[in-house]
Length: 141
Image (tube, rainbow, N blue to C red; front, side, top):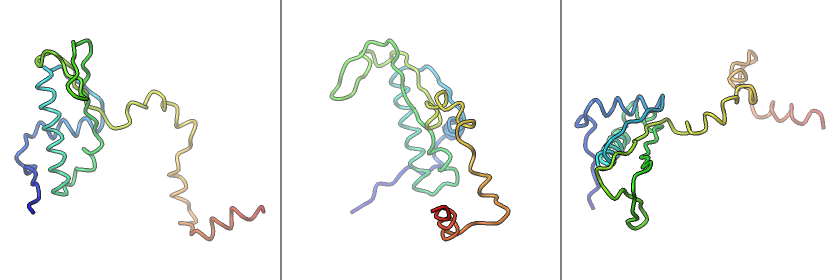
């Protein structure tokens, strides 16, 4: 049985890698014809899959990217379970964003609601073992 091989990472354009890196850090979008947007998204998915299979050093960064296509007000039709534009060259918006960035507005004040746990990691007493933690929890009982 042969395994499916991915196109090597070096065969992808440098601009595709830059798009994934930028999208891991901030949201941005572009307007494109629908068929070009779908092709671009698929090419970026292929690059990411190739990075994963090769154990690329920056895979962890680019795996955090979400790519969506917003059809906006374009006339659409259903093909099976998929909704596609009637005109394949209709202009749509392709959105590149970090995973979970859709929650940024809702979690905007999270720093004031939930304290950062990094201070516990830098405890001057050093790391605590599970026995110490259990003793602290049970001392009041």
